[in-house]
Image (cartoon, rainbow, N blue to C red; front, side, top):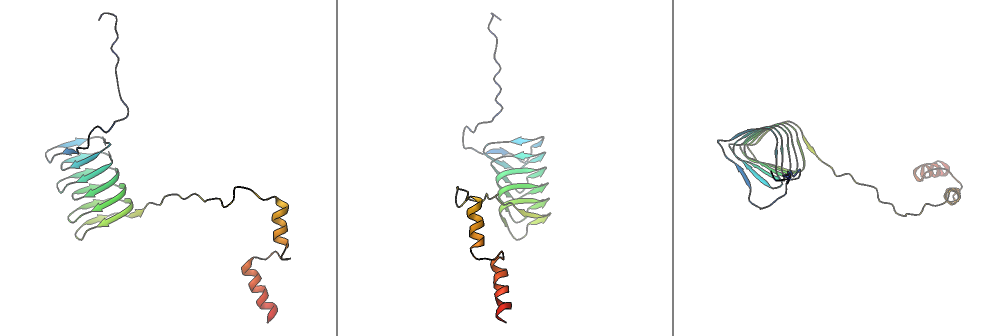
Length: 163
């Protein structure tokens, strides 16, 4: 009003302020994407995707969408895929979709209709030596034996010679 402009502060990254879990009660139904940096206890219904650190789907909780989290405990119903490091599907739970996991536990009485796929961390090969040997040195090592055969082929050749 008097020459000062109001600055809009919009934070694109949500920051974890406290360690209290967010609770979505049984009488709540959300449509859209849920994002949280902490733990979410879901007893209601979400029609959309969820991306959180830790998710507990209570016995009355329902998710229709993709779940991405570090850990997921399912006591209710998930219609869609789950992608998490640690997944626990407890007795009475229903999962209708694929489960991508590092560790998985399924209690007796749980229902899973979909495929279970263990995620594997990509391993990068480790170099034994950072120095590359010159081409002449490598060829000399190969020719020392006087044969271009591999170890297995050398053994087979030696057996035929001795027969």
